[in-house]
Image (tube, rainbow over all chains, first blue to last red; front, side, top):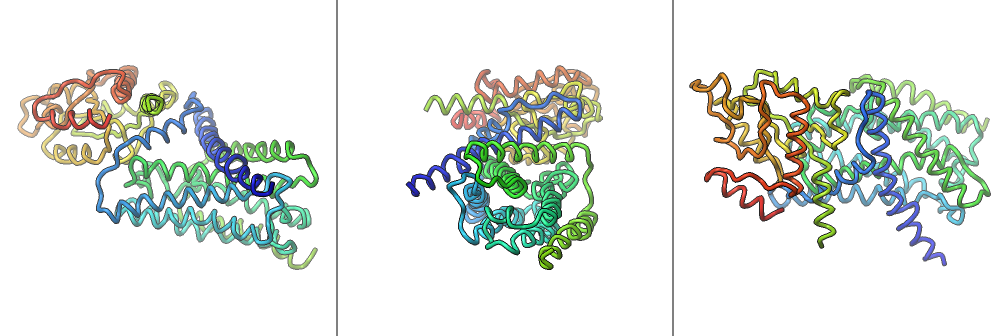
Length: 301
Length: 165
């Protein structure tokens, strides 16, 4: 029973099947909202899926064997790690997770940006290196408030995601969730923090030299990041204690999509900031929210 | 197997990503090309995406009469685009060299340098015509339309295209 349940969780919901479908759908929602707010009609809903299939069918350009291997392995590991992060989200009521799963989740989510930095440098391209440098600085900028907010939530629970949202008092949760929401556009490379993947400014940033299937894997990893991060936000912001599974699933998907819509509207209505402005924004306003949440949590107020 | 092949062909038809190379154009065609991406024409409805890197592209759009300085860069960019790929000649210049014909600084027309698959004539062509040309290029990628026969110099490259498709 337990093995069957875990298998379903990994392969169907919230794992493989749901993560792929939701990832492509969320990318489409973002592109569609962007187009509608610019007065365009925008792409049809199957667009991200066909983009992915088409990229898989392209013949990659010959590279030195080691470089080719590294440039395939990095995005592949990124896909697997992000998929793992989605699969361990405790959505269903029978799954209460395990003590410490929040640490596993955060490390799996952080593997993606780390590999993207390595991938940018591994491509030996000027633009790839530039994008990787920017991504590395961005990671230092947004992870400080993000991790502080998670620590504030986790202080009085035993580091398990399903307890995180319920044990912290509401004012700590409010401040911490605001800090986490602030970090999401930077983690997803959206405006106003689309600095590392700045289209047309540094070509395609980290992925400039990636072609065909290798690029498809990066696109897939990015789609899965959408599902993992919005899903984490949904679980932490609307905890359902004792609710039936169907409600848990519906609320999880609904809140995830609401966050996608919010982030897309913000992205479509803002312009790109500079790197120094972004760092200042996160270390001042982001950290202010997160540190006050941590202070309240430590003081036990 | 045929399901995968038809899925791949549909994906290629629905998702043509474009890289734009300027080979000495006067910018008239370039401005008309960017108009395709604006709200009035909105080429993203057809899945057309303007890419900054040739590694991501399926279609190379070339404007301008291929000057001597851009000739080598064009060949490099053509090599950087992964197969299968299609070359679109944008405007009258890459087709005939237009008013620049006979100039000592011109190598063109474009079909002396790259195997051109689709011509979009005009000086500059209207955005409608450019989108129609890109849709034709996507049809060639998907195998709906045969690829035109190129000159003897390009026969080797078009034969290798046929093997992958």
